[in-house]
Image 1: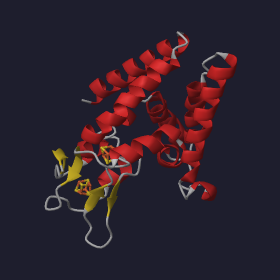
Image 2 (image 1 turned 60 degrees about the vertical axis):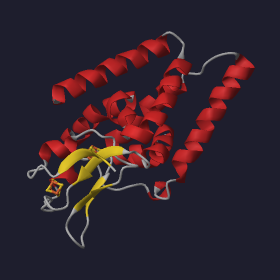
Image 3 (image 1 turned 30 degrees about the vertical axis):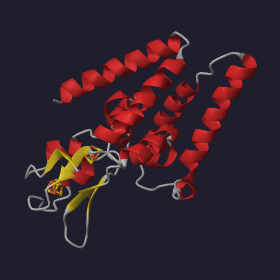
Image 4 (image 1 turned 45 degrees about the horizontal axis):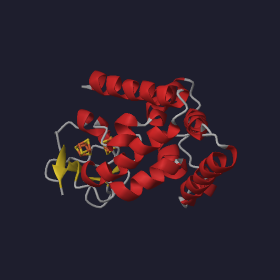
Length: 208
Ligand code: SF4
Ligand code: SF4
């Protein structure tokens, strides 16, 4: 399963680079727009399988851990979550101004791609996913209403926290009061990392 997921991610990364090389970033943004509607039904599939930033962040996180340079801290100035919305506004203004005034499509998504890798060299992936990524801010807004999502069967959960450790977007947390895991669908990328490690098979993709 992991191999298939990685092939899908690699194919979309290739498609992204091809579209950017062709100078048609609007095509990618159209795909992103469709993914927001899809998120209302199926959750943040785009983030888990299509997004080139996520695809590059996965090996970057591995490298960061290997080099022992990853920190568990979150920059304090990012904690209120406003930055991602400001980044979204700046990105939109840049794209509109460059298109209208200079008649060019600025490859700003390549800038975000580079930033996602740089940030993940130092911080856990959830910092970029949840606090910085302008596209993630939109996905979160739509993903919170997802009809289908990974969900935890409380009766099967033993509170072992294995799922927490492998979740790259900090979407699953074991509550201290009842020691049961819960998934925040607005943050969940539907990547199934948690399902693959859960010893009691407590996590499934289910309707609300
Ligand atoms: S890995 Fe499974 S059993 Fe362990 S806390 Fe997560 S959902 Fe519960
Ligand atoms: S590990 Fe589980 S909770 Fe975390 S993003 Fe992936 S599917 Fe969602």
